[in-house]
Image 1 (cartoon, rainbow, N blue to C red):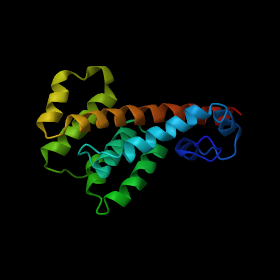
Image 2 (image 1 turned 180 degrees about the vertical axis):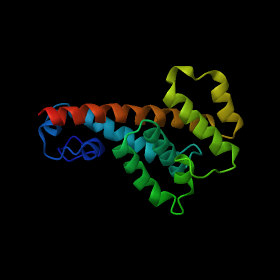
Image 3 (image 1 turned 90 degrees about the horizontal axis):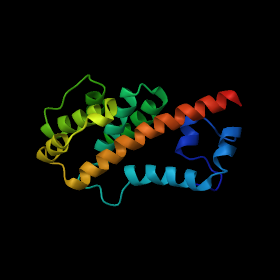
Length: 165
């Protein structure tokens, strides 16, 4: 997306044709790879058994924990198309529970890593594997958690920059 068209970060930060958007375009590889990360995480060729709806719901959980309303709304809107009855969204936001060990393990891991990234241990990965996630799904989930946390920080910086220019 280094062609000057808005990417997901421009859109979320409201940067269309702004000075911060132009600054981002001075590093086209960064823009391209950041959008590429979004594409790879949310539309991978091999999902490893972690569905698009589950990935998007996990991203919504991270955004909710980070208290980023723009990022939360972005993932809520994405999830609405993948989870039309809203079950996953309600579990992420705490108004419903799915009594499924696999999903509970996913949410617990998202919470653990988002709230205290350094606190995850081997047993936490083992819990995900025991809940039925493949090694590939565990890696995808970890990448997703890191990416949404990164997104939130980049967006905070872009919002500040937008306000300063």
